[in-house]
Length: 189
Image 1 (cartoon, rainbow, N blue to C red):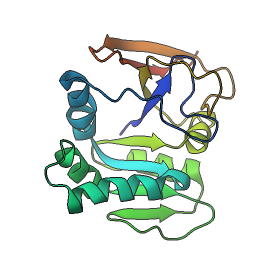
Image 2 (spheres, rainbow, N blue to C red):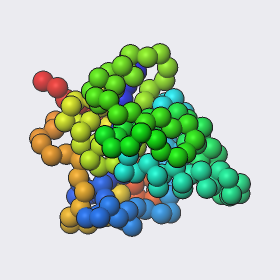
Image 3 (cartoon, rainbow, N blue to C red):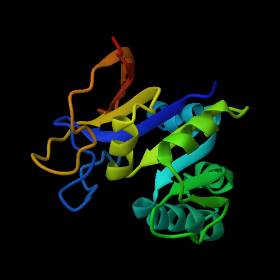
């Protein structure tokens, strides 16, 4: 069965965005080994992306702009993968979203995710946003958590955990840029 993997940047104090979703705390000068982790290793292990409606427009316009207008961008190859990979967007309010390789799902989240996991193929990657990820966590749908912990505390902001959630650390690696990548599995007793 395919795994549902969450990849998310997080502050040292556990927030995934500022109060209004600001991401100005992200480490910008990333080293080559860290870039390889998310731009090659993780993305090549999946064949489907899922995300919530709120982040999709900005996500797709950013990466499609690089593919369509910036062939010399250092992230061009990664952007091409993100544009080409099938994306499933969950929404209760809209039926269509502009962008390449996007399908909008309006049905029951748990039922759809369980069906996706049973399909043949590579694993499935979750990119967010915070509310969407929280609903996946509440429903115990995530099989693996990959947190990119940035070396900043912001004091207040968006979070994805709303209840006690026990996790088991599988691996941890620090990178020259100061980011630590921790991989966890749910620690179900």
